[in-house]
Image (tube, rainbow, N blue to C red; front, side, top):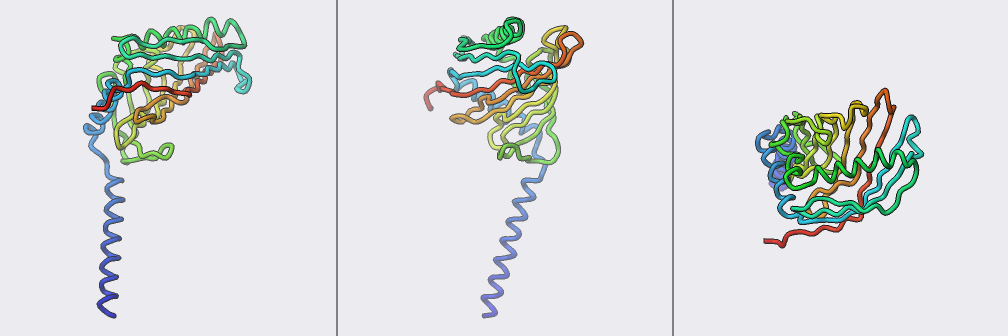
Length: 240
């Protein structure tokens, strides 16, 4: 009987040691250079394997203090082809024609330009385009996923590049969320623009689900653009 009790005690000590060891490993600060390499590899992997996709995107523009009733809305079908870029087909639109013409249409035109071959690589969230600093504390939780949190600073000024925070999946380096201030205002009248975008993993690759851009200026006041993405259809490279 004494031997059984002693064996049980040993097992309990071993189990406690293993559990404690796991906890300590997760709380340890990972190697920053290794995390950045993981991010770069994830960006390259997505570019190589996602040959194209279509999705449905809904845009809503809110003005002033009214964050309930959009001043204008637009639903588009987006088509992306690697080596070609993005194109948009407007499926529906409503609200202010002025906001649609001078707000949403230029936004789509800018996205088309940004995603042209030769341009799109300059917008990737990788170490070629951003200075990255891993925040202390190890793994953090976001949307039920283990993530690393990094402070990022754009190496050049552009409306679609941010200075802020980047969350990436701790297992494969894929982007989970970005949040920050645009490194360059989209226009002299827009003022400082705050950007946020969330991602989900679809067939192993990160795809946008929700985005928000908010700006305030003396000329046009407070404006919020909300984008929701859905109904994705991906074309992937054949498995090697």
